[in-house]
Image (cartoon, rainbow, N blue to C red; front, side, top):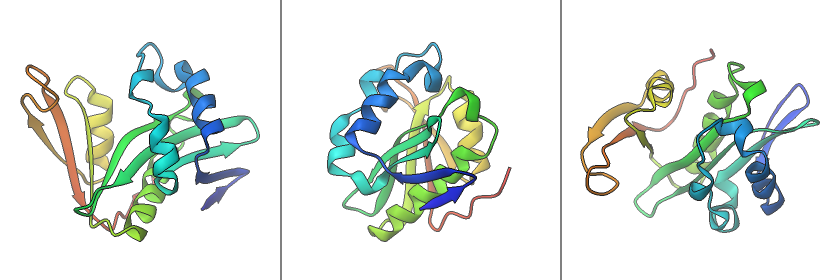
Length: 157
């Protein structure tokens, strides 16, 4: 668990999941990604679904899991609008990587749309290799696929 100036990164609860959905625009702006938020991830992979909690609520979260082949897959990672640029995303990734390693992960993986240049730049800054894969998410759905080996040494912003 990471503790930083009144903020704790801990496993997510179903109540946290519902709070994140309620506050969805604070994390994702105009993009409606609620359909990608799966409560089953929190219920089944609770030790790798994490929230950054402070007195004023959930400042950020990462939902992911470890695959049978030893890949720590990050399904969603987001920081609240007032927590961007603080290094919180990097800290969430570091805590996820540590949790994934405890579950046998040897590498990390994430995906995003090729239009999401912010996510692509963020993942590259963490040392991920990015590959553009045609039809990754179905016909005509090209995605940026990120890979990197563990351990994850997260440079400070």
